[in-house]
Amino acid sequence: MSQTIALSHDIHRDDEGSKIGMWLFIFTELLLFAGLFIVYGVYRYLNPVAFHLAAEELSVTVGTVNTIILLVSSACMAMASSAIRMRKKGMTMLMLATTLFIAFMFMVNKYFEWEGKFHHGLFPGSEDLLKLGQGDTLFYGLYFFMTGLHALHIIVGIVLITIVSVKVNNNKLTAENPVLLDNAGLYWHLVDLIWIFLFPLFYLIA
Amino acid sequence: MENHNESHIVPFKTYGIILAVLIVLTLLSVAVTQIDLASLTVFTAILIAAVKSGFVLVYFMHLKFDNKLLKALVGAVFILIALVMFVTFLDYNYR
Figure 1 (cartoon, rainbow over the protein chains, first blue to last red):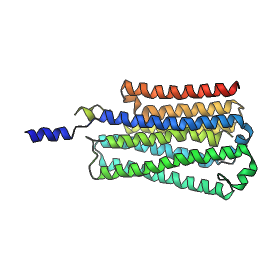
Figure 2: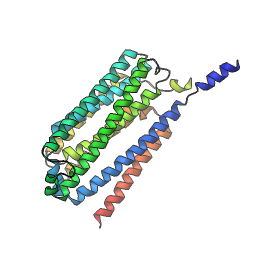
Figure 3: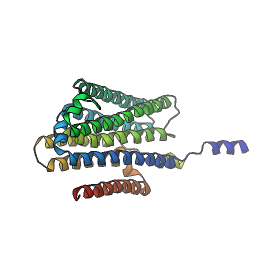
Figure 4: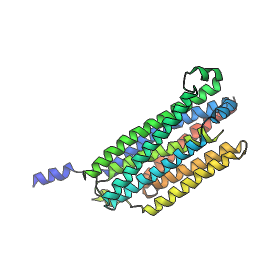
């Protein structure tokens, strides 16, 4: 009898607590990126012409494609949270796999985009950039830092969703215990949320 | 037991509709910024981004079905960010 009590005590979980913990982490991430957006805003205010011209170098098409595919992946991740509760394991796995595939596609697009910029001599500290002046240096510095930090978050998301997929496949995460999937989803939506603001600020306002 | 029974299952259809709205808003923001609205361009692009982020927070991040404490916390963080931005730009504008 005492063993049963010990066991049931062991499996006690606080799903609401886990969720609030994840949200607290998300708040720190939001404040981190908000700080960067303020830096962008101030430098843009001080160098309006250079920011305007430099932003024209970025491809609106690539930016739009990446925005749309990231939105689709976010929807898939949200659907995975519903699917696991409906006890549809196959559907959950399919949604997680689609999310991972799209995340990978986003990174491939990012690679080609950055590679193109490097090819034109546009990278932090390059000779070409120094010749263009302070405004352009600031624009590309912020562009590489902010999209780079965002891309780092995508990589972390890929690792996290892979772990979740393995756990779902091994029945470690089920309709009775879907919190890790939900929290991975929250993280993934945060990555989407940040991109929603990066996209107009770097690609559209030219 | 109470842990998982509370959570509300959002139907796929809801997420599908929200996704469609988000894609339309993205295309709209691209279209709007191609037209020259002078200073309004920045404002419009950020306004559309704010609306999009609202949909992501409320539906994808499940806030619509979360408790009031969490809603208040998220609201407070965004108010804090808005205030810090407002004060910073006020400072730069009147320097």
